[in-house]
Image (cartoon, rainbow over all chains, first blue to last red):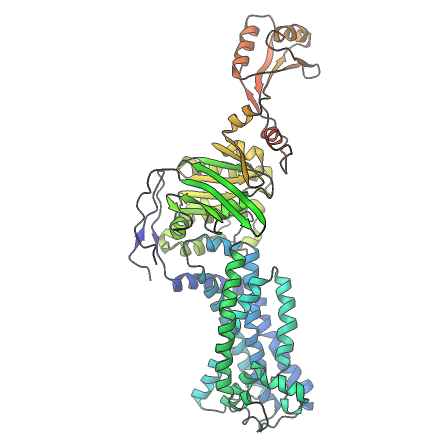
Length: 285
Length: 335
């Protein structure tokens, strides 16, 4: 992908100066993605947030709380639960992006990269790609765990694929939130604090773990308009893990796939410009 | 992209040039009209305490932050209008060692090499060469986490050199290093300069600027308060002293009498068998040497003691630099 424009930096001494090729944004981003993936290889415990943690949630909800949560789905709570935990896992893509970005800014890695002849956006694209891969590992682990506890894909192949595609799209929207939080906060500890105290309640205040029908009026209203609920309902329907939402459910749950696409578009439209502006401001000081 | 025109030889001129650089952060004025010029192949030392504006100046010159006003050129390219060309022509080693702890030394070099757009073969060749030069060949395959502070610093510098940039910016390159690692790094930097690299380094260590720089600018509160060669700066504070050490203590009196012919204020230190007198410069040393040549007095040493850069800083700013060094600068003329 090297363009034919090759440049030789003017030499002032007798040193041989190597040829610098102009590279594409994609190639720059891939080099950074690769570096981030080496991190996972060197510190596999980084993957705990998308492996051990959600598996524990599956065990906890399927076997401890599951007995007392009544769902209308024919296949039972365990099958119904899985899409909820996957949505929670993918919502944490924002957390993964934010932690990685803050660490890189804090350690001066971002400055070093910005001093190189690359596009600054490659830093963000590379970070986003590795975070999506990170989250996808979680989705694979969840699928395998699901198969063990009796979860099945009951829709068509295309519908199954559609469910996974929606999860990834959601991850894409979450990346912008991650860039915003990662650029705005000054330390990894602050990012962890903010993300845990916002993402967890947000994913619990939804249909991810318990049906919204049994919630109080206000709570039910909030939960059904929670964007996560649209995603969870859409994925469940596409995978054949639940029937349509009850007739009295809020509008987004009646058309969950469309609602999810709208939410992803809206979240991206709001967070993308905001996050890029915050990143540029933070790094250009 | 606009940066597609071939980079020809820049118009002959300084390798680094700053023209009236100003940087405001809100109400704070970090840099307040800094200008300097570094000829190709030479070293500019930027000396000043914490918060003097050194790092901000380097950040502007390396395109990391945009000047509020003023401009600069690196290898002939404008830092505001041609940031991409500037980035191709320079390497930067920031204040903290910005190498990736979870990557090996080699992987760090490969990442930055790939981002510069070097091809694989070049990256491998350059990495081998740099690792050897910085005594890191054996550590190249190890994760940086296991490196010592000095090794990290050397790798950091090696990474900045992967594309052999003609201009190098070093922001406090030896901060936090033990004296031995510091001296080793100085040697590497001298080699780079011998190879034709132009260097701008910031430092709080007066000794470091003295050791490496051809020209020193002293910065304080965002302004350059003095500029010159290390020698000129020391002369400017005007406190050079002639120091004579006699071999036999009983000669002290006679030697003192002889030196009174050169200067009024003579100070005798009996325990060190030495006599100190204010001196104008090397001329006084020559005169003293001639006097003693024709006498019976045997000397151990005769030389000119110049003020340390720390004295210079105190003289210029009225306060001391952050971390004064305790070295004395003795420039000796053999008697």
